[in-house]
Image (tube, rainbow, N blue to C red; front, top):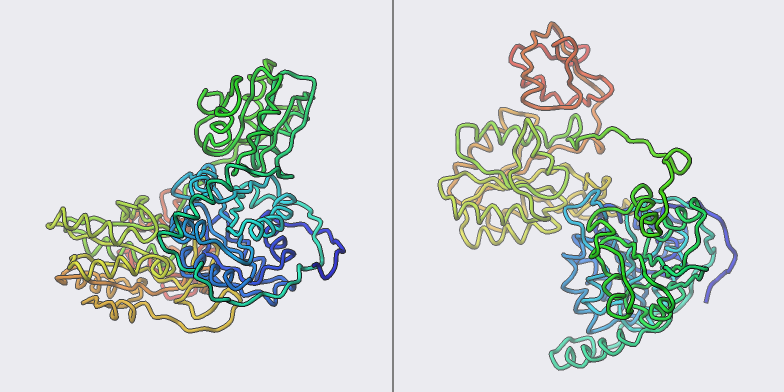
Length: 596
């Protein structure tokens, strides 16, 4: 029951709406791993007055988050887990098993997909995973719907005794809307953990549950989120997720009405509703991000022409935006697309290449490794995070990048195949705890001769500065144990472990050189805080520049530019790291206010 049913209007991001929906549904355990576009869900929870009785944590990775939440759910607690689509790859082992073993308290797994992709290494569609795992998927089209869907997802999870996946996409996560939020919270008393053989997954149980899942998801019930709208037309448009909202705007702007089917619960698919929708129509256009998931389901159950990705009416990848959707819809309807001026004019913004921030300690770390390996045959294996940006000129110290934690293990394979090459593996501090330690253990156990470079900037920088086990603080700011990376490496029996300040360039180069010369697994922990964590109150200036451009050609710092062939430093962008002063051989760079 709700403590209160009164409503209040709040302007929220889609992620904030999901968080508020979870609060209203009575969530009491929330865990996740930061990843754009999902990060703000837990960030909203941690600062909300109604969340004071909720356990909230950034887990070491998505797998750990799901497993911890499962334990709470077994005890009758409503639980929320958040991640991005790539995180689902990490969490897939326990998620797949929970489909078989089930849950008790409602468990909602929010997986934010990233069409584009805007900030991800893959463009995946979680609806396809839900189908494969036999887990219900809900696909919100707006922040308002995300708020309501989140509460429904908890109810549905308890009804089905299975986790439910909520799949917002980037536009929904980061859209802003005024949402009617309930001031009440669903009140219940968790049962506590009750011992039962069903919580132990055995092959015979899995066989039985597989049959149950097949029956359950092939006899879907009607869902309020699958909606049909009729019009005087012999064609139809089917949408899912945020494309529903965009298509609504386009049809309104065009002044056109067509039959529409909105799929808010794509799995299990509403087969009978789709068949009824198709009756009397000559063709259907399917607009969805990313996989042709709805399109495939329609092709199986209707006998009319289905236009979409397979028919090349719709792009096979990427976001579906107003600008391209309006042309797709007009072509489908056989009408002329209007000019761009009267309808939703757009401005083409200049592109900005991704670059390490001015003062970023990673730039100095990459540069130290580059100098230490300058006259050697070297390969640099990168990882996911800010340090992926080491691939750009002039640093050029990222030759591979596969997945989180993959740099350390990829390096092992490259070294084995290229024994005459010095192989360096870069990884960040948060990523080290998320998925790097296993690779380190593998390297030590199998005697791989590589050098691991941990770039410890004391935060999870790429996703907005979240804490991790190496920072000594939790998501709520509470003080906790600080797990020392060098001590972990030593415990894993890495033979050479050294810490250094990357801004002390000479010392850092010597440390990397010694590590590369070590016969076995070696590790260098570069320790310097992210500028967002510790901004220095000083900056540098150039005087009597001779125009050699060494500072620019060696570092590529965005705070340094050329004016009339002379280097200048932007005092607004400069954070006083001082690496440029070290690099400038003519000694023409100094601290502002320093001696000439």
